[in-house]
Image 1 (cartoon, rainbow, N blue to C red):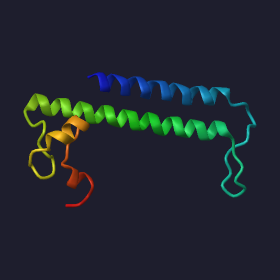
Image 2: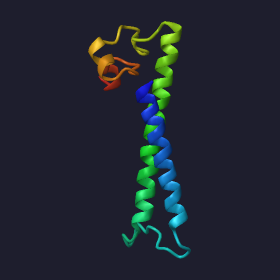
Image 3: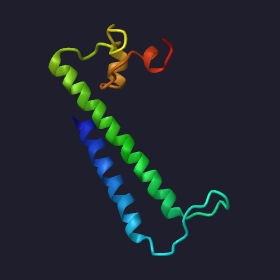
Length: 107
């Protein structure tokens, strides 16, 4: 739950930062142009903040799914193979839903 709270806080903060960058933009500011390679750091920072916020929100979704698996008694069971997820993996990533060989695409 602590990790979930950190991710929620991070996602909210990053989204707010991205939104504030839009507010700072003046009409007529340079927009990113792939052909000329020109661009502004505000657009790049905003895109980075939005990507990091989306990543944090995805982690919250994964944590919520793990909490649901705890409630329904399937926590620690690989969603792909149905085999137990090793304790070491769950210690490292408590919301892991797949064994590492399936997550890595090996099987």
